[in-house]
Image (cartoon, rainbow, N blue to C red; front, side, top):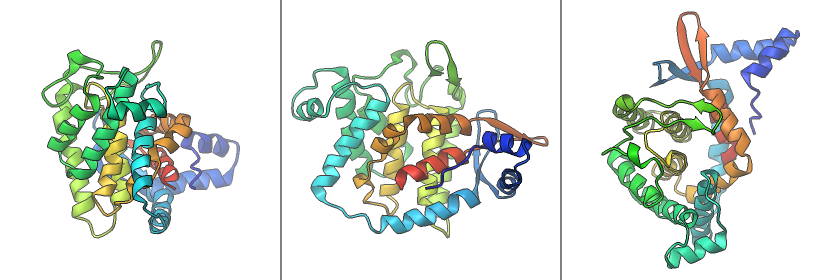
Amino acid sequence: MINYISDKTLRIRAKKGDEDADTELMLRQMYQENIGLKGINDEDLVYVTIVVNPQIERLKELYTQVTLNEQAYKDNIMLDSFHSATIEGARTTVDNVKRAMTEKPKSKDDKMVVNSINGYYYALTHPNTIDNLLEFWKIVTEDVCDNQDKIGDRFRIGMVYIGNETETIHTPEVPEKLEERMASLYKYLDNAINHSDVDNVLLAAIIYHFYFAYIHPFADGNGRTARIMMASIMHHSGYDKVGALPISRCINDRLSRYYNTLEESEIVRKEGKSKYLDITPFIAEMLDVLE
């Protein structure tokens, strides 16, 4: 476990004279690595290598100990899809979902979970391309898509906002830039996984998850899509036992941390004239979830 301490907390401690906190802030600045993706206002995206890299190596070792049972694998895909849809607001039970898999779903909530299960299997059996992503999204949102007026031929054609009735927490990318942002995301993914001398799969999958949620390219279902695609990227790149890992269930168990680290990673930071997003908080949280 990383047990990542936020920059805000470290700054408070440093102002109170905590030398260790001051040193940690300095080291984080020294060991930032540019990811190569751009924020909504063209900020750089970075992460802190000394926080992330040791945990990635630990997870690679732990992964070798994962055992794979076919029935457990199938059960976990169903349960993980259930939890992923629950995160997005679905309110149903596992028994209802089991019935809905063989009968017609009786509610929108049941349909959301069944769609997620079908989408999960599609994502595990099709390469990670934008065209396959578009087909996957249709499966996940079939008959349950909100914001119908914002659905485009490929990506959304209107603005969506993340928050509640009284507060907007995050404003995603404008529709006009989504094609460009998604092309850059898939270029990053290809370079990180297929054109690198080191195993960047876990890091690349998590960065994909963050960036997808950050720009929110679809009218609805972005969270479900981001979580399943993270698993799909790992599955297609040497981590084929990932379907046995209860990723969304673990996220759901610590949901406030998931949203808090997303929000913290979206903060625009300044260093001289440059602006950047340090997404280490979200990467660290996802590495803890995977562990």
